[in-house]
Amino acid sequence: MKLFAGAPGWTARADVIVIGSGVAGLTTALNARAANLSVLLVTKAHIDEGSTKWAQGGIAAALGPGDSPEEHKEDTLIAGAGLCDVDAVNVLVTEGPEAVRKLIARGAVFDKAESGEIALTREGGHHRNRILHAGGDATGAEVSRALLAAVQNDSGIEVIEHALVIDALKASDGRVCGVTLHVIGAGSSSGVGRALARAVVIATGGLGQVYSQTTNPSVSTGDGVALALRAGAAVADVEFIQFHPTVLWRDTSAAGQQPLISEAVRGEGAILLNHKGERFMSAVHPQADLAPRDIVAKEIFNQMREAHVPHMWLDATAVKDFQERFPTIYASCMANGIDPEKQLIPVAPASHYASGGVLVDLNGESTVPGLYVCGESACTGAHGANRLASNSLLEGLVFGARISEHIAHHLAPQQEPADESNEKRVLIDPSIRIPLQLAMSEGAGVMRSDKSLRATLATLEQLGSRYTDQPGVDAWEVSNLYFLATAIVRSALERHESRGSHWRSDYLETSAQWQKRVIQRLDESGTWSSSLEEINHG
Image (tube, rainbow, N blue to C red; front, top):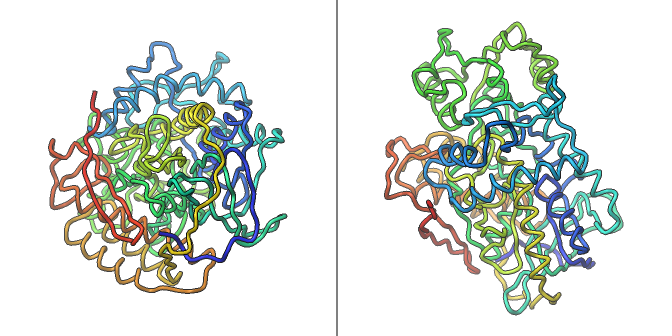
């Protein structure tokens, strides 16, 4: 199944195509070059406009005295709420420290303590100080800067900016051998073209724009995950959408990307208050305001619902040197008329991170040969039902390196695409975007139920029947959001329990019989199917 698009008018070739310029894509590209493979790096906007640069939190790694990968593993498993794949977690925490050291060797500069050592802080769900930060609250920007500098100094990496990837191309044996794409901005190529390679790596980041309020940038429409779905790849754990508990609340009508108030602020002593001025997290979890994100988000939601108010408060007035420690957050607050050193910050949950995605193995390969997926677009099993804070950048570093190594040792010969003229093609009218986002936030957001999910699915089916024959970026993005929203709602309906970042008001308990992965697939005719898969719990 494919999206309706014009016939490709140009062709590019490389050993490896990497789609996305965040930490996952850049790491994969650099490691592929280390194996002497030519790389075509495709990015939807400017090369530095992905989600990575927005990451205010840090990178978690067991680098401090007294810490160990085993302790990092335990914290990750607890946050993952019984749904982590133990082998994937082991890979993440044991290979993580070396991946961070390699990042530092590539030029990334992290904040230092007075002793001159790298300063390690703590965030929600961690029992030790193991979070590296850069520029206080600008870790993602520094990681992106260091990796981009290395990429731009490598003549073996060709970059195509402002390019939306449309669909995968397959050879006659079913192996992915390239992609179709549309170059949006200026460049030597324009319009729809095709890029052919011996392996394709999706690293397109998140899908936060499927909701009306999100911390994700506008480019985060899940294009890579939707591409993989239409190519026949299995997706898993997509019901587990992490809602960041503390996003700056501005107005009930505010839409799109919202300013994030990192939990590192709570790590430095900020506390959550309800509208009576009372602390409420201490009665909910032993770690109080530093409890795992899903627990904090749920309790804020509960407090909001019980008090019939649109937000809670974050009191950061006792945080020492707030402006210096969190310059980005300080600027966001001041731009919205709030002085965080003197005033309470209004906060509410918003869509932040997809713990699930395209199902991959420990080498990052999907269920479709030749198609690899890395970073937030992937479901490695390392995050389970709820990602532990600051494990996302680490996952991109670790699995980006593993993917490149696997490709280098299993590189297939270049094949030509098979005839696709008989494949079913669809394209959905871009006018459904806002109704889709509102429906998802209302019925498949922080709290769900059978009633709300079925109503959302009915709305999606109605919206999905509005087709267009006018291809373009808006229609391609909306079509991707439609497929992803449908997968999320179908999986959420399937899981009859509350676990991690999936919370159902009609199934409030966590059930041992649901310690399984929900898989979704889309066949060539557009028919959906669901299945359950056992998880390696160790």
